[in-house]
Length: 329
Image (spheres, one colour):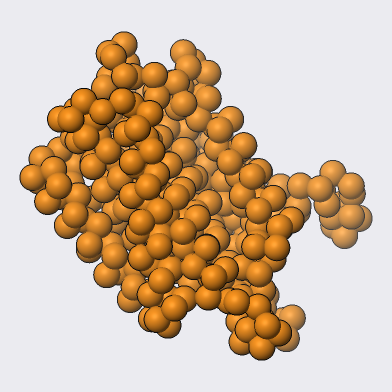
């Protein structure tokens, strides 16, 4: 096993990531085998099934990439799902009711995410509030703001073929999953920011030992806040990929996506204690979450089964991370 781990291509990709890719392949063939047995001969091998799973993976992936920055600092953000919905609601409402250009509506979605990122970052980094409490409060604010702005009405973005529908090509262009390409491109950019820039190194160091970093003369407040701002920005981007796949957004929702995005991070190798993070691992984790959701529905079970499995996966991953850290001490 050690000889295999030391192979150049294994080191380049990472042994844990290769294991996760193996899990995706195993899950796919397992669902392909079980679906016809449990659900009246329905096939899981159709290309449409793959595209449907990917639709779910895109916005979970963007949410996961954003919250990876926050978890790397040792914090948490439970507002990302509602912020994504609020961004989609308000920008979509402006697009439909005020006839704004689509490009401006997308910018509004990104800005709303940034505003909530600034809100969370300010109270956590500069007012020293626990990230758990801060993000729970902003989650409620986001849900309320979206409902008030749209008068508790759902918002429908332009369907394919309608004017202002070019944003859908960001998710899917014919049968080409362009969203997957963009997700990996953004993940690569996030990985460079986290691992190759001063900002990213400080974010990781804050998660490792915030007090030591502060005593060394680093402005930890600024860099910790930046992690939340990036998280908000990517939540705003996730909103565009959500409506690109599902069209209609309802106010007051989004909570469950927090857990799935965080589960993707943890499965991908990001430590809940901070200091260790993997953007590529987060994307692979998002693909696992999406495939699991599609497989459970294909077998005829309700989405509640996914919640159970996601919770179990998070518990197992966090337990493994905790035991690994204890062995290193």
